[in-house]
Image (cartoon, rainbow, N blue to C red; front, side):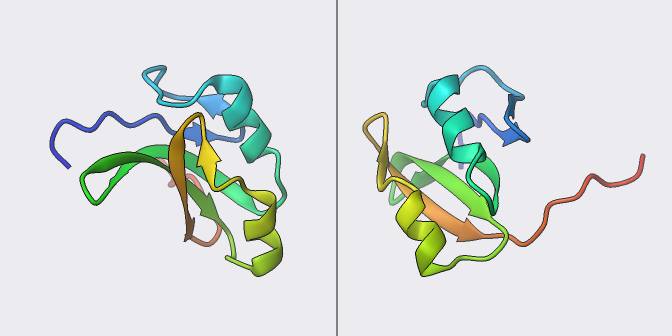
Amino acid sequence: MGDVRRAEMVKGRVIDGRSITNRKRASEIMSIRGVVGIAQGESEGMPCVRVYVVRKTKRLIRQIPAMLDGYPVLVKESGKIRALPV
């Protein structure tokens, strides 16, 4: 992924402030039931927003915008995300 900067959110909290999306919009996406994460990513060499969901369903996909702040949104099924024990 080279020099792609990531901005990940967990439960609505931005971990890295260098984000291609603004915090309010990212928080709106994170508030959708079934969404477990959002990150800046790359698709076909272009920046995009990746939205991670527990289970990718048509109903959930309809709730997530296709574009966010001018960037395409890719929905990825990740399952539940849990913190690893330290």
